[in-house]
Length: 379
Image (cartoon, rainbow, N blue to C red; front, side, top):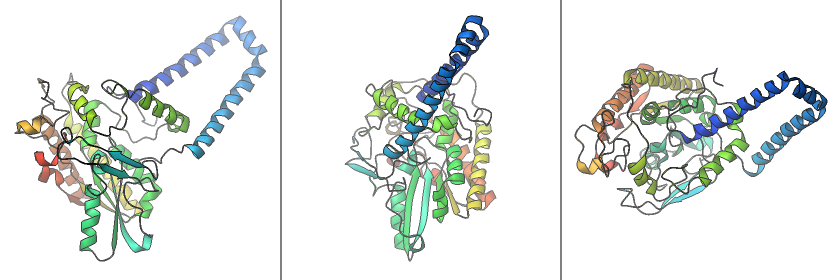
């Protein structure tokens, strides 16, 4: 997996410690086995018990496959880049924390794992699939309030015929994940148009040191048993949300805790943002090529952010990443002005790629940047 370019090492990802712990245990087991083989008495003992060792190994493998099969039946994992099919989440956002958002918010996932209604028959509607991260998923917004739902409503009023819009979006996913989804998901063959609003998550992954490769993780990482362990890890460690694993935050309280304690550190060396933007552009171009190969229309959107050179005190109080409230931070780089300039480079690259590949785009980043009324956090 590492040879193919897959990696998990980052400075701020709790899941890395689980993965690296598993790798360390496997290496330790291998070293112990080699030592046992190298020492005479233990080598002879291994030879005498070889039949039992083979039976044990085969039993473990058979048990693993049986466990995976049972999990596929009773607790199936959602397909990549999708949410569990047929689920419903209910949020109760705190209007003091989630500024501009209030009231009960229902998130409905259809039978395909997409946020939105069930798509009409293929020949009866023009189907649009919006692919992205949290800004496309629309956390804390009701099904009727997301921009994808508004797009469906307005296009339905303007066009003859039925329009369907759904969101295949997962918080923190960026262009590496979107590329893999567009290249391999069968859902792409069932839609007419794909819309992506991208940029902020790619920048954040670079800023935090997250993996930005497009390689497929190894088979064991994608197993149902391993997924169940990760679910248990997140749920059991979610009691103390200041320091432990993330669970669904139904009220937005986690947002305030992030403002107090989100672990973001200044980089010891200057960030090479232009190089990161070029790599982002290459992934975006690959997405354009993949969409063209699949025969779907592609629309690209730039990413709106609150970061701006002259942000009001009200705006500063909503920031997590470049926060100055409620605890004053003397940032060298992580200021709203610097982060806003970096995002401008990402947004300019979106426009450049769209124009060079002949795809349509909408410049939401230019229209909405720094407008406090649109944001309850950085982006």
